[in-house]
Length: 333
Image (tube, rainbow, N blue to C red; front, side, top):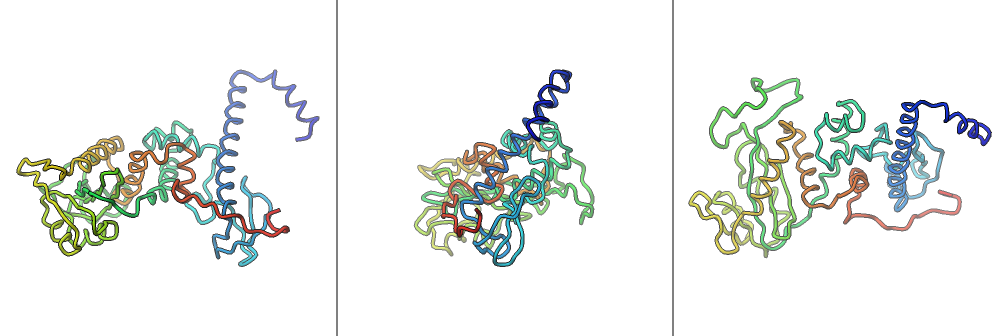
């Protein structure tokens, strides 16, 4: 808009009704949020720019599309932007991303988050899992010192599936079999005394020794100490891995034996289950996303919508890349 038309626009503001002024304010606020989100994402991309198709580092700018800078790779000649190859590609309404991420930090349900940012509930559901798709990858690589491990179980849910391998179950209905059975999904949680937490969805039924080898063997230090309940799978796993193991038999009423207990991991189980009650049943297919969401809230590593936005494209606090941008005077100028 040129200066003449802008002055005419300013002069016409006095004729706006209160409702129209409110609408104009909301639109300007939305533009501010959109620019803030885009600026953060593009600034992060420029810290180490490379083609998402071939990883080539020589590229140049080629206009803007949908508010994002478009680039062309000098290697494969393909075009892309800062979101290409990430879960956020082709998502619209960028002005509502940061307010929606605030709703995620507040643990709002799909419908409550949709009302909060004025989007449809199906958009809210799609955004939730797009933003959480890479957030769940923010997890420690190793447990240190004393590590507690225990399982919690949730009834398998196929909510949203069009074809079921079993008869449909009413919402809130209990399992038909008593105790731990194939109707339940096992969530294995390992937590060390420094607060680092790892979780694994091992599948239906009780955890097995083979699953412990698959999940815990890569993350436990050989000179560390594994503490568990009396499940014999942990004993045989630790023996085969050469890891020191202590079992606390909860059924006998012994919950703490000196420094040996599983109180920390059991407390995490209680927080997890209490937090998930608000969602009234989570589809097992999306369970890893919810576990990553809860872990992010529990560790306080992603405290702001901006932190969550960067995590959604794979940039976590301990993985921020600071390599200098590689360009020539003619490129990215």
